Length: 120
Image 1 (cartoon, one colour):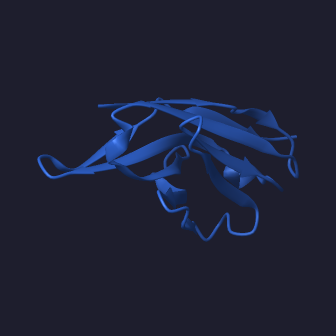
Image 2 (image 1 turned 90 degrees about the vertical axis):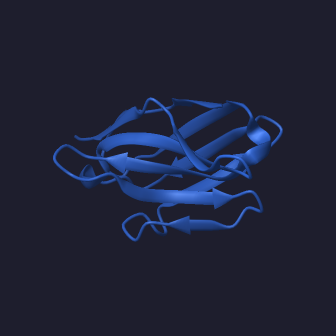
C-alpha cells in the first residue's frame, strides 16, 4: 500500500505561482511513476505532469513551459511548481503514484486532492 498526502493548494491571482507537494509513504519500493492530475468542474481528469523513478518527465500540453515537476527522494516527496497561473488552471489537483509488482501488476494510488483556484 502507498499513501499520498498533498499540500500547497490555495487561491492565487492570475500570473501568480504556487507549489504543490505530495508526500508518499508505505511500500515505496514498487513505485515507478509519480505525477499530478487535475479535474475541473464538469470536466474529465487530465494529466498535468509525471516523473519517472529515473527523473524523466512528461507534461500536459496546456502546462508546458509554465509548470515543473520534480522529486526529492530523500523526503519521498514530489513537487509541482506552477508559474504564470491562469484562471483555466483552476481545478482539484490529485497526486498519483503507479506501483508495479510481479504479483499484483499495476496499481494506481491517489491522494485526496488539493484545490487550486486562480482568480482576481
